[in-house]
Length: 492
Image (cartoon, rainbow, N blue to C red; front, side, top):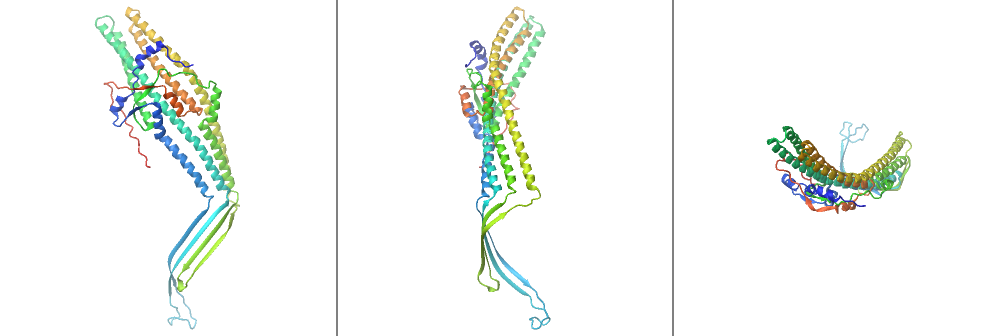
């Protein structure tokens, strides 16, 4: 059954939730580049288009796919051509003593300088008829493509959960900041009243000091909440490459319900069958198994058909014509002894197969554990949200009673300050519980392999149409804001 906060709880929360505003003035004043407001679906689409890790995974997938064509090329016809043109010069020097030999009368023949030009051309073609190694390399490349499909799917799901987590961290930080601002104002008023009562002698200085200490503590908590909110926006920028002036808040009517299906074992079954990391490791086992086949193929013979043509010509001694030859046949090769490297390669790839099988089992166990933990967490979050909501109502009642007792003298200012802090802590805890539920539910869907854009659309439908904004107080120090820089431009 879908639940919503009770009427009394909504009345208590309304002063603190009506102003859920998230940083347009802060961002516009601190960052000198365009920014705009967006909902969760818009930001998710920005991340799917611009996220650096996801773009890298897509490029890696294309690289792996191209690797199959590289491996396949060795099984297709190979044609090569080579040729040269050269100017040649030969030097001869001979000597002899036989009669009638031409010379200079000293018994030495004259040197012979005989330059000539030559040209040659060779064409070669071959076609593998049987090459088990190359064939199995193509098979391995195809298995790697299958594995990369799951790796890419896992990266996409991780981007979805990262964006959702960052988005709701902003809303979480904003709600907590609202509570801290309200707490600071309430304790500030209490401090003013204490100072006024001390001036007319109604209370001791110790009560003023107690109020001052509580005010200083609330101010420190407010500053920390402001810092958390700003950091949360910067995380979202890193994921999307965009800056946003504001985002939309989650409706108070968002249903807090147990996960569906309600059986934990069904979620485990979904995860084992659909989790992309599990499937990627399973595909990795097949990649390693094909690697064993490649190593074993090193012992097998290869057979190829070949053909070649050679042409040669030169102008030595003025001889005309040219020489040419052609050849066609089959070539076989059988490795007899490779120094033991073939057997070592088989052992190596076998151990790699064994390691990949253990990696698959480790990922399967980790996924099962994650699903069980997240299912339990989401189920507990439903009760936690309900308890946190009731805690707000109870602490509001306690604060009203304590204030009444303080006015009649049965309670002191410390009691009032503690009740104030308890109320705003309860409001903060309620915000934490609501967003923990949403993020944990999405994480459960991720582990089960069921996180997609449609799941984001379902949550996006529960966002309020109005923009939520927040402006830093005038005394805040904005000089320490860090600009993480513009999105880099990628070469096309």
